[in-house]
Image: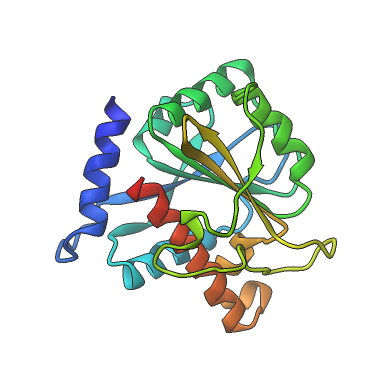
Length: 219
């Protein structure tokens, strides 16, 4: 209930008037165990926050919070971003905390930064044993918010030559977790001099990120 109320208040503040100068909400980066680099792409969330503030009229604090999977602090952040290249391990208590967070109204975006897939799927299976990741159709609302993505996720970086895919965990008709695979959105959100991608590629990544945030807060 606490998080549900926070989501309603957050949605009102973020997508209503833009005259408030003080930031009203922070994005969160998920810190997990297992050895994977959860801290990858340090400039990604600040840039995404600023892009959304400029293009969606939101009021995000560019300084994101770092929150551990099993912490009660997780409930203070309606949107949590998770990334990395390697191993992900959730303890039983952490999996239960993440489950309760998502059931209470929280939203998790997982962005595979390459090499994360075989680890994050078992971890999330521990959170929702009864659910399977489902590929979302291009007609899904998350691709059709402020920015239109008729062909689904943009391709930021090539890894295994696969097409980008967007998967979701759906609980009682509600998308609680969005998993971007073979897209590498977070790399596209980083400062331009980090990966030296064409600006057009960065803009597509930021626009898709804005769609994810808008969807998460307007559900």
